[in-house]
Length: 355
Figure 1 (cartoon, rainbow, N blue to C red):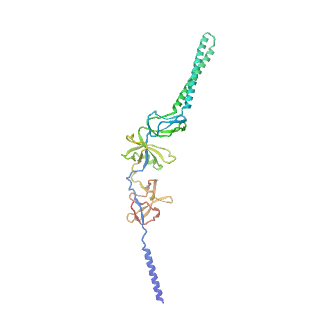
Figure 2 (cartoon, rainbow, N blue to C red):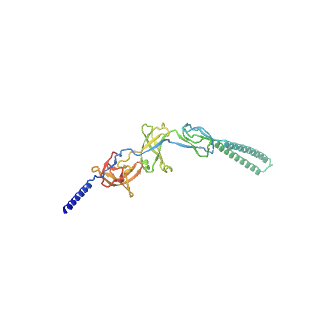
């Protein structure tokens, strides 16, 4: 009776040992990952920004008086000459005011003539001692007052004449009308922009700079400008960088002046402004490679021999749309995991996928 029990226990032990061996021999979990080699793009060009060709001098044109637009004389995109009329306001009110000022000047001239004639008569009467010197002095004062009224009326007439002339909007210089909103029937206020004039001459590129790239743009000695239409790249230099961000885009408008002859470039052309190559030693990694845990940043480094990963703390200098700039923690040539960083564990073996 004891032998069957002993045999059963031996069989159970054999099966349990076999199960443990099978469990121990389970295949290791190898996770496929994508990766980058840190520093592999050190010699590549720096960040680039899309922009458009604009005139070096742009003027927002506006009427200097208020009124209703009655004539639009040019359209957007037309080339105009200095002094050319662009639009007109209804001049009726200003013409009436001009006529009133002319009548006031005529009345003042007439009064001055009468006062002078009276002064002449008073002086003749003074010679015959029919009037006193005080009366002559009073008449002289009347002449002076009449002369002042004439001067006042003449100045008012000049101002009214100017107001009438301001009812016609003219070009300040030769150039291209980039925008014309003065349509007939539109009532505009004095100083309300109704046209944009891009003056002939040098061209430049208008770009928008994010706040984390301001220092790089300021320090750049030159920029490489390429046009979407093709052609040889152009060299540019920073001419202007706004101190305040645009309230809508939260970026900083900048202007890149183009070297050489840029007069042939058409306004509105699409251009790409590229910063100089990044300084050697400043490594950049994709944002997906950075693991954020409890306010600290880590990356998974791959051992080239064992293909096992280790979590490594890093210091991130800056983050932008192009990736993360690593200040320390990663050396050039290190293989860094770029996808699935939240699924890895320390020492886990990985399989490298094509980048």
